[in-house]
Image 1: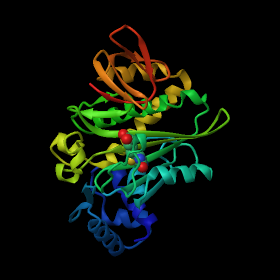
Image 2: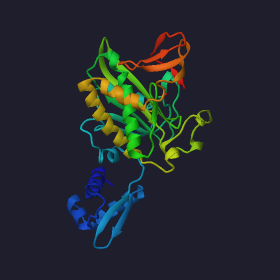
Image 3: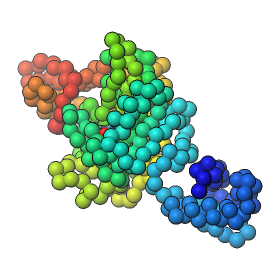
Image 4: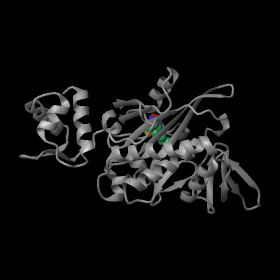
Length: 324
Ligand code: BTN
């Protein structure tokens, strides 16, 4: 089926808001015959759409498939800029890699690279990121006009937007472990990897890579992370629509990003702190130069974690693995 006709059909159903649309109406809107409409409906059904047909009433969509595509994300997306340009792929080595390439060749602010599967997903600290087919693997390209040292704040902003999206689309209340792990019942459901392209002190682009475990079952995780990882579906007890989580994330991200560009990090920091689990607790911080123990007493305006050791000395932690 031609993709613009299919988009038109889906848009019409979307605007109908769950009500029936008659075959004749669909034919008029699409500029084709009713038989052609019926053929297009059959194609959509093959793609996993549950479309009800009732004589004298017409058609309505009861359920959309959890199949990702640029069109399904754009349909119903409530943002002005963020996520309006989508580069969707069934399989990629890493969305992060492609996002860097697109940013190099001038991709606009808010461009989203998304893949159903990554074969070489990248995690923090040079780790690999397991990215089988049922998760959300995406990289967002930003071009903020901010001083370079503020770029890490965008990671914390993204974490807040993800928590809000999970709260919107499930009945789960996740927490954040500094700097950017999102946890449910102490297990990791999301990781964020922020990378920057800059020259002298000018930011060309910030690429925020986000991995969310959505519909994995326990067997889908490799043995080494089975104990520590979880998915939204495992916690909710039912499958979750990836499209809804992405749309909600993009909406919350745009609201927070606009606020950040206008008012700075303060309001974002307050929200981040309200979701943080590590603050006020005794933690172990494994940094590249060694291990530190102490109380996490807060984060600075640059998103740096402050740890007070048993001698009362305060350490600034820029990058580490935290255990609570
Ligand atoms: C972490 O180690 O916690 C960060 C994981 C980030 C994974 C995401 S998935 C989408 C994007 N593409 C990648 O290769 N990595 C990031």
